[in-house]
Length: 106
Image (cartoon, rainbow, N blue to C red):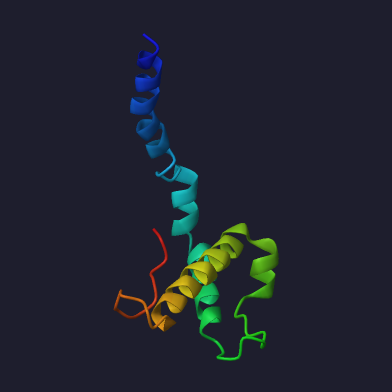
């Protein structure tokens, strides 16, 4: 009899976890905005701006970054996404081949 609650929990866990995989309507709208996409592009471009890791070569619109949440979030997601992709490309032990930079999420 004690196995029933445990079994029910095990069966419901994937369903509950699946709900967190889908974006909210607000997140989709944010990512579709021109400000988000501009921020994503600038953040992504910042990862490729210089081969010198000590140089501050961030590419971003300071006013939009300071006052626009969509631009700021796009910049961070673009920087993080493209930086990760760039590190994967530069890793000689990487078994995944390909090129280019990731497209911003829709």
